Image 1 (cartoon, rainbow, N blue to C red):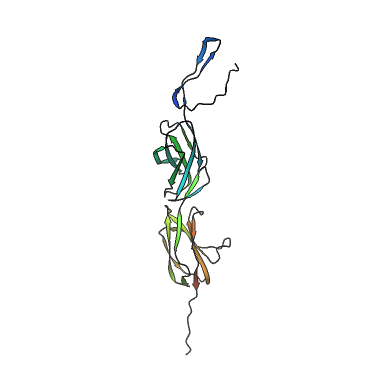
Image 2: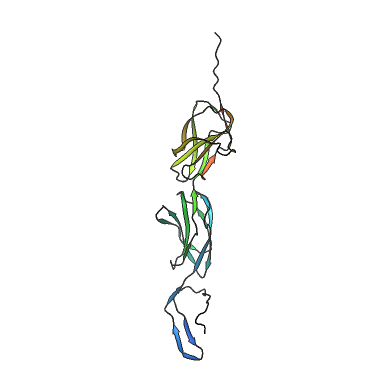
Length: 238
């Protein structure tokens, strides 16, 4: 009798559990604890912080369960700088330890996943650190090998997946070089188009880059280069 014992909690989820300690030599000498709960335990293993998910892509959610939990609730949370707002993924889901999640269009630099036992909401877990949900871009024009002339007014167009309010627009004649992209607009309303006055940057290889104005990791570059050529004016002899 050392006055303590390390107990491995059994797989017996219940709201009313007690422990009894007694003297094996004197059955009338015993004590019973106050009631307590035994609840399932969860550990989310994917995602668990630092991941970068793209809007509307499918991502596996995975978690481990200790104890009996047949049905769970899945949610994702977004932090607005002051509060976490939790939104349902599945309210009642058979607990198989995994779920394929269609990432929402709502973008966030601080997002978490939470799994909760349906029968006892005290049994839950959430991702240890936040992950990101980012927008996806696709540059539509200029097209590959398209020829633009200096001082032309040209419509750059792109597609966006996710709710990105503002974009940054740039161009480069050598995208492999660090800091080679030149600014067109730092904060442009994301309408999917921009009228560009083609600069005097003569090149047979030019690329456009579109990125989220506040999340620079979310970006797209032209799939193939286009061309910028000069305007030639012929002076006829008198």
